[in-house]
Amino acid sequence: KTAFINFISDKEWKSIEPVSSWFGPSSFLMSSTSALFQLSMWIRHVHDYLTENLGIPVWGSYAIFGLATLFSGLILGLVSAAFGTDCAC
Image (cartoon, rainbow, N blue to C red; front, side, top):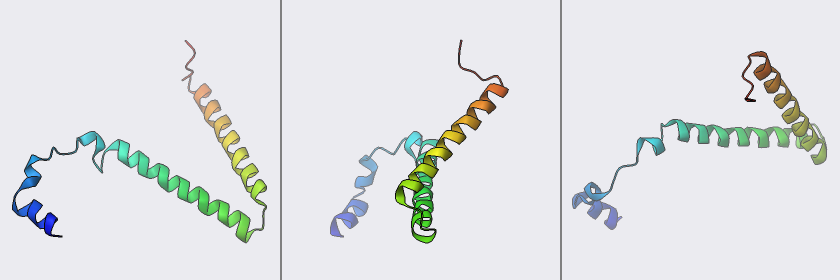
């Protein structure tokens, strides 16, 4: 506590370089990182719901997530092909 008070009263904070806007809390990079953490927590919640409330075995939950990943990749690929955003040059 004393070190923090001295840090403020002695104005040592002026010698510290500010965080660049790229790594600031409201930047696109940090917002994306936060969204990934929230997605991982949501996936964990769904996994717990499937295994604890519905009684699906753990391997069954993994299979459901695997199939969901495959189907979402298929849909994104079809949408990409439909809009002509193919990366093949």
